[in-house]
Image (cartoon, rainbow, N blue to C red; front, top):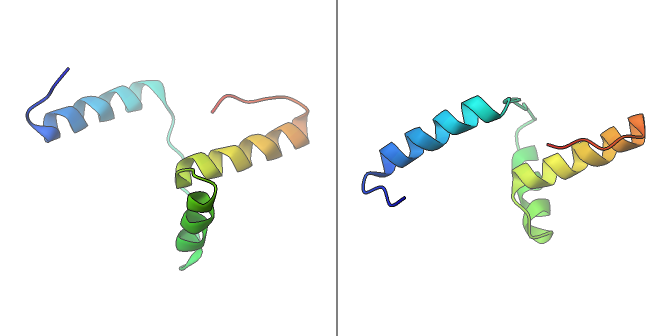
Length: 69
């Protein structure tokens, strides 16, 4: 789908995301984001993927069920 204008592509992506996903904001102490980013990088993951994996593990531990994030 080659968009020439990146803002149009970004707008389309944001529209899709807003229809298909719920958003959760996470607030952390200063410096924590950098620490999480470094830990994620060391695992070859994005910070979003790193946090989602942690949530999946905890949810499974707490409920005995899997969750699709």
